[in-house]
Length: 100
Image (cartoon, rainbow, N blue to C red):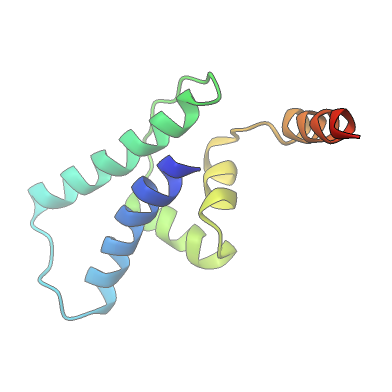
């Protein structure tokens, strides 16, 4: 979750601020670096689940999804399919059962 909030979330916030605020527009080189940073963070997020992801997402598509879902976590799950919802639900139920 930390990679999403402190990584992907910060990249998306910077992009949204630049698109809607009075900030200077990104140069082509800066935009390439911004998208690379976004994909690097998503790859780190996937690695936490033991998955190998070759991120090819645009900042715009991720930002639009975050705005639509109001959730960086849900957006990452929809984009990457990680974690698998069924496995996550099974893990949650198992950990909840073991607490009882």
